[in-house]
Image (cartoon, rainbow, N blue to C red):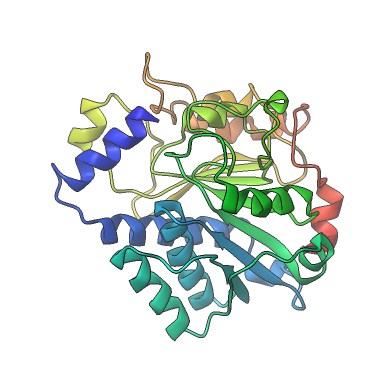
Length: 292
């Protein structure tokens, strides 16, 4: 978490990027990764996406992601429970409204409503600054998302997880087990415990000087790409600690040097697909029924 915050701080201060730029690039990159993983043609026409946005920067990424997914031709609804106080978020909200994206200010009380109406849920509730416990006004929302059979795609960090560690089942706190994780800029240490089918890194904003200063290990990008598959096991569950170990290994003692061996991770995905590991309770056949 500390290093992820350091990356953000340096980009905003030493490199003079604005919060608006960070949010726009992160949301666009997440949308590009999403569209690569779930092509629009593969989704059932009668169901839509539900993009769940929280009150902080991760919610901002979600709003930008929703706007681009709309431009890409996806049918979606945004869950956004509170009117934002920060001007940057209000602008993003207004942009979505101007594009006729429908909004929900409440989470349906019956989980079957989610199961019936949505084919995928994009989780942008909490980001890498999250610390347990979940704030009371969003605890019920998170509980509903853990109960639905709809596959979840988490942006940056699965909601209910802290950046440095996966949650413990003995904590009594609700947390998501997403089918897909899209890490922004670099994977966080908690992604070592991610056991879903797909893990992508999205976003290219890190100057070489900052990468070298923090000793980050990032994938070898193709010249024009902004989304990179670390683990891609569409027909199975990636084994926590095997291919995903490669995608989230630290650089020395650095918690977020997390993309070392990314190319190897993509190559190891076929092996990992045959492994075991904890996944969201919706199995591959359920996600196929709901979505593709």
